[in-house]
Length: 494
Image: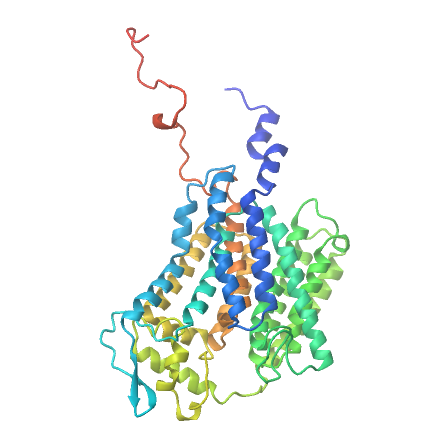
């Protein structure tokens, strides 16, 4: 059997320039998605108030555009997209589950109004059926719930629509630059010793940074984008045709990541600062090892030494902030105990989205009476209090499915691994803090998580097989435009 010619053999393993152009040229849906992400990012980054109706209403409007973008993608994508809608319905299942619980929970409202004289009081009734969802939230809770669900759907599009890694190479740099710009604004605030953040009323406390009223939210946000910046720096030096270090974009990415990570030395709350600094230390250590072991750059030794020393400094700073005695909030133990009590009272479905703030007066310690709190001081405890065992189990299964699909596919994609480090750091922070109550952190987390998952899909599959079902080598007869005879020939039919 004759062997393949060299040019034919090369074409079977590498894409031709025309195919690369088809793969990397943005489609109409990709352009729409890019603008959608930029608009949502600008809104969430700049409006730091977690419960701003302007922000949540804008997110609802923007999230309503996602079906139109998906339909445009279905009609304009040059490759097969058989898995588009099944993946969308499967990946968006958490949204529909939350909305279903919110709506069906109104059938069992545990709080009733009791009138004594001219005064109205709220009365907590026994739960009639623990196996039925409960909605114990205020009337405007649907705005918050729908706003966060819309932000999730906007981020989910990054797992469904991009057809090449070039999309993320165009999308992530401006977002990284925007995050670094917020860090510079925060440094300016710190230097000017302002008494409240920009564009928000603030909380009356000094623990704010940039547009974030609470610097614990900033620490989670900075952790995500610090790791994203350094990941892009490592990506830019891995290409074979990349320039040497000092002539590439890598120094800019590393500088931006260092500026974001160094805010851990400035912010007030020690534990979020420790997570941020330790995350920066891990990424700088990866940079040092990458240059020391693999890089052929003429400046590799200098870069490795500087990155290693900076990693040590950040690690020491992280340990110092971890053991530092911060401003202790005396209400936190009571808030977390109230979340545990709420979970024990309704363990299956919880008290519904945004139910913690409404039910807290019935379960709070006497020291909290007369004060209003919306968060339990721990996203993990708040998850159990509002969604119960079922909601926590579905959340765990959701992330486990994505991670199982990635790791069992024997994918060792470095950019994906690095972005997952940032997501893991914020998930750890959510055990003792409430970072996901911030729309900026919530959107950034899922933006980077779904980007990491999509990058992995695009890195180890052919461009026309990423969203295709099993390839059909023979088109069914019902879909053919020209007659095609497949039955055995006989002399009579000839």
